[in-house]
Amino acid sequence: MDGATIEDGEMKLFERKQAIYKSLDEKYLVHGQRYKGQQYSQIYFARLHHLRNLLHSLVTKWKPHLEVITVLGLEESRECVIVGTIYKHMKLKPCILDEYSKERTAVPLVKPHNFLHPDDQLILEDEIGRVKLRGSLLNPTDFVTGIGLALHGMKTIEGDFLVQDLLEAGFPPQTKLPRLGEDKYVVFVSGLNVGSNIFNPLQFQLFVDHVTGHLGGDNEQKMTSQIVRVVIAGNSVIIPHSVLNGQALTPEDQRKLTEPIKEVDILLTQLAAAVPLDIMPGPTDPANSFLPQQPLHRCLFPGASSYNTFFSCTNPHQFELDGFQFLGTSGQNIDDLDKYSSAQTKLEFVERTLRWRHLAPTAPNTLGCYPFTEKDPFFIENCPNVYFVGNQDKYETVLLHGPEEQQVRLVCIPRFSESGVAVMLNLRDLNCHALNFSADLDS
Image 1 (cartoon, one colour):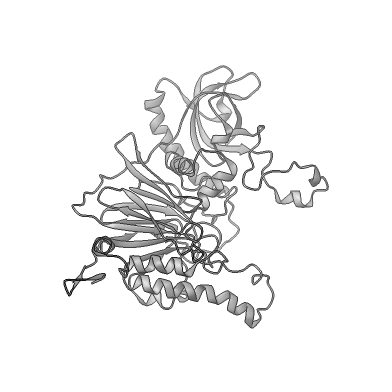
Image 2: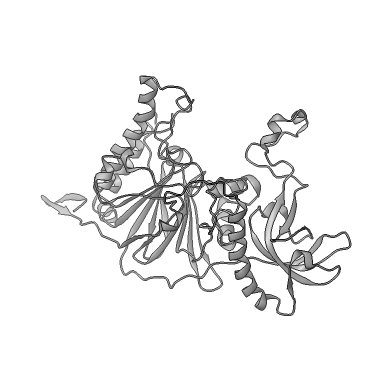
């Protein structure tokens, strides 16, 4: 039983609905693997192998009359198709060596959030060579390092490759969309930032009380009872940087370090007592910084972890709920795309990762990741029904339709500490709406 209201002197109870849950995070887990000097070239080879096999199968339908050749096999003025990985040469890309350069003052000032420059160039690489790309079809601002593409064109007299057409990997295949005869909701929230100056405990307590069924009348109570899962997409905690200085911790510093985590545990315990809960690590949480981030240790949450409804998950996080496929991140992959490419909205970046079939194409070039040797876990093999990204500036959503009847709900989840907004998604029709919580004591 969950929510309760009093009607005609009698208490009306609503039983919370259930959903069958299956975690699919196994591919993102690093089981006791240690760094033994392996290089990042191996994850690029694994990515190229995956995408090249896929693109080769698509090229036969796309350009059946053209031969697919390697970069070193290019001949001047001969039309062909080449397949490889994009490398983006960026004039303003940060480099650690610049900090030690005597001429670093000559480096032009750049905006801290974006490193684009009109002189950026695209290069295609395969295992044995590379070639500079030309042509109005390719706008460098739309692409980043790490994408796999098939390109139709010809070698010019200058030795460049003039692109006439391009082929992306495209939307992954999707299993048939399950059908539900009743409403079931999943609630997404991110960026709690407990421990920061902008965290409002009353605001999040309102969220907790709403989800657990302690607020509202009959209509709200009924909808609350249909919430089958809560997903917290990263940045639950902020540890003050002054504490993380490598020095011995004073008792005051120890208090600053542990109090935000204790406060989160108190709030999560209330949630886990009422509804199944997934928590993902984010860039500010006490977890490894590189992707895939491993689950937050259960000892951090002694209260919440005592419930079998509490699940500490990886980032990225992939799971199945009543047959619906979910895939999401805490936002690092999209934020990094925003630094090294441009788009009208963050949703456009999210859509691009689906079309490229890769969650984090900029890893490991500008986004830290584990140096995998035999696989690239960020390759998207199957199209999810719901693709969510946490810690964004504002709430955005769109329902995408793929060429093979794929349906994907894309959701950008705003930082709760700044917006007071959570997102509620209905599994029955994939519609979603924002939940706004305000606790402004000044108003």
